[in-house]
Structures are given as structure tokens and as C-alpha cells.
Image (cartoon, rainbow, N blue to C red; front, side):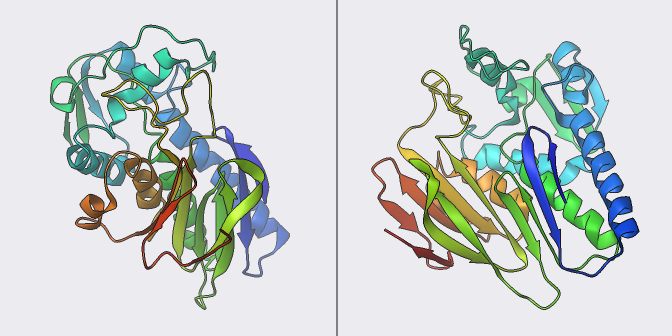
Amino acid sequence: MEFEAIGTHWKITIQDKISDAKQSDIFKLIMNRIAVYDKHYSRFRNDSLVAEMSRHAGEYVLPDDAKPMFDLYEKLYKLTNGSVTPLIGNLLSDAGYDATYSLETKTLHMPSKWEDAIEYAFPRLTIKQPVLLDVGAAGKGYLVDIVGNLLLDQGVVSFTINAGGDIVHTDSEGKKIHVGLEHPNDSTSAIGVAQIGNESICGSAGNRRTWNQFHHILDPHKLESPHHIAAVWVIAKTGLLADALTTCLFFVEPEILKNEFSFEYLIVYADLTMRKSPGFNAEMFS
């Protein structure tokens, strides 16, 4: 099944033999689940939970699915000295990556510090001052996990989910799939092919969502996009972790993250030199 959701293209391939009626029912469940997730976390719609937080301070009860993501954000905020933060929504919007994708840059301000803006103790999030949260560093990968768990709950045990390059693959027999690694300077070619099995691979590149001098990753301290890295891929057990760590690697050395998490990585620098962890299973073309 293929569809558009949360601003990207999805392709879900189910290896299990299921009836057309069952597949139709599953598709409806998936679309409904994505809609609920979007209503909670999208900063691009006025009726979302995070939009409400941007207008009114106070104590909010988070959705049941929030704990893994917010726990991870809290940990990564500390590990990256605030470089990876959910408090970056206003900066992204002011840089031009706003609800209308205006690409018009306003005056930029450093995001608030975690301790000044929010207090997190699941299931409660206290907004000390109105702030626009953005969970884009980890949110798409996490949603792929959520959809994958929905498939498992429906008895589907072998599948691949690809949401704009955030991929989760599960196979009851442990079969692996090949994933092309897009060349950061040429979207029509690849720099290599990775293999994953019962795990996730996510990538992030500076050639996606670019405008003026910015791309979708912003340094909250320097108020600019990092350009020393062209692309990053991470293989991890979950889409949530893989997605989040691709952003982290734009800011911190892999060893800092390796002390806390199990993952493999490939970093392609602006001059196309590469750094790859020993366990990153890929054939590189150059």
C-alpha cells in the first residue's frame, strides 16, 4: 500500500498472505492512527496539542504514546548540550520552515532552555511559558514504529515500512532487505547499498528541505544549519532511535552516543569523505 501522510510518501509492503478485505481494514486502522498522531504532535496545524501549548502555558496530560519519545528527547538534550531539543519549533518557524512553508526568514532567537520552558514527568508536561514544540528529529521514525506495532497487533509478522526514507523492516524468518543510500549531491544515484534485518534505518541529509542558507536541521546555539556534514544514516533497533540519532550526529561525535545506545552509523561529510562504524552493513560505491 502507498499513500501520502504527514508531508511524506509512505510505502508499506506486507510479505504475509492476507485477504484484500483484511488489507483494507488494516489500511483504515493505519490512516486513523496516523491522524491521531498528527493531531497531537504536528506544529503545522492550529488544532494540535503542540499548537495549544504554543498559545497557553499550563499543565498538560500527554498522550499514552508520548513517553518513549519524550524520555529520549530528555536524554538527548543532555547528551548534546541542548543541540537536539524539542523546543526548536519557534526557531524553525522563524527561519521560514513554518506552517505555510513560507521560506521567509524573520529575526531568529535562541530557543528557551529545557529547565526554563518545560517540566516533564510523564504523563504530565508543564509548559512554563508558551513554546512551540517540534518533534521532527525523532517523530517520523517513531510513527513508523507505531505503525509497525499496529501491523504486529493485526497478526502481520513480515513487512517493510518506508516513510520518506525512514524504514522499519520485520521478517519472521530474519530475511534482510537492501536499502539504497541516496547520493547527497545527486538524488538520482546512490553512494551505496545497506542491508537491514529486523531493524530500522533512517537517514538525514542537508539537501532535503533547503531554503536560503538553511536546511531542516538547525543549530539552536549558532542559529544556522550545519553544513560540514552532507548526510547521515543510522541503523538501530527502532525507528525512533535511528531517526533521532541521525540528527544528533550533526552535532556530537558518535562515541558520545555509543556510550548510551546501540546503533551503527554512516556519516558523509561535505567533501564526500565518509566515516562508518564497523557494524554498518553496507556496500559503498566510492
